[in-house]
Length: 454
Image 1 (tube, rainbow, N blue to C red):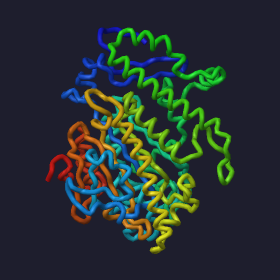
Image 2: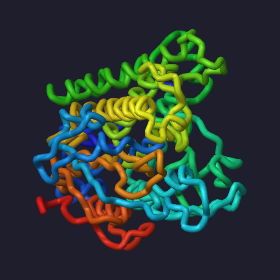
Image 3: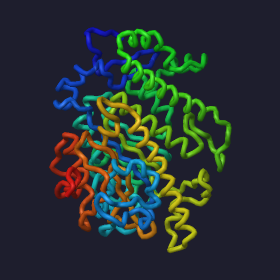
Image 4: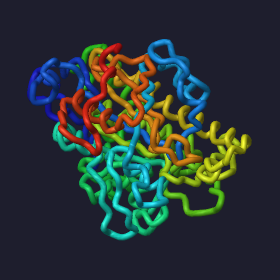
């Protein structure tokens, strides 16, 4: 690392043997951070966007608030987000018409996932001739991705095939992907935290050099050990506040590294038995929190400003034994009014929101410029289905969390007219992120009441 100027450049890295760590925003970077080529001219932190998807719909009576406006009460499923109520917009009335059959018959799960960020109806095929629209995350990535090391990151918590039929004649690519770079090019999510970690802290776009990793693991060294000299040199040029920020940041990096190491050394067996990929925890909660930690660090070091996360592939049959549910998720959602099955779905919905609330906790606790990462972020949480039993694609469950650098007026339940395209929400978010876009999916305009009290 060479410091060629009085102030620290925004894109400063600590470099080690085959690794590199980007730094969070420090006060010493303020002049570079304000440069027009790096950030908005108002000097604010860059606006980040994250899209979190949950499969198989939600038990809606336990989701939609009874009240509109600022006086709404969070119901049972949403309760884990109660601490962030004032940073949350609950949006109801939004629809993905592209998720409906439109003459194509069964296949609602494939259509739910593929339409979620595209607002489009997928071509029904189990072959290579897949087609849908470009997703909102990739529209943003193509516009703002040049400012970061990675234009976007695509993450997941459940493995899935990309070929063959996964839902009534629809390609598995539709059920197992959120991000679409082009109309026929999905970006598969990475589910292995180790590979995400090494991609973030490798010297290139790929994972850490294998020889370097082997040497480091042989001597049980952290990637931070190889950067000790540069870290100490950097700290001598920092003020007390920046030193504390750097120490907290490096501590969080090491904590993630330890979690990954622990999961790799976990000798427990999966049920049913199968080969456990390196770095993937057996416990769903551990896995999700580890991924959320990596997302937070990726935003903090400005490695990317656009991230998608699939908390499960659409139509997921995962069992949530961590909360005492051994039944498969998807069959449970076809409850046909069975109260015992509905209660299990409620518990799964609640568990998902708990994991998401952990992410929001992390964003709120992470300093960024004059505020926190939550202040500069816009985070969508939702599903492409509302009622999983009936496979409905209207009145979808959607949360919008964060301040978007002051552009969002949160702490409200906003109910939109029936059949309002969800793509309108995405057009609004792109506009806030300084990526004005004329069209996306079936969008027909921008949403009102996001930036004002209406």
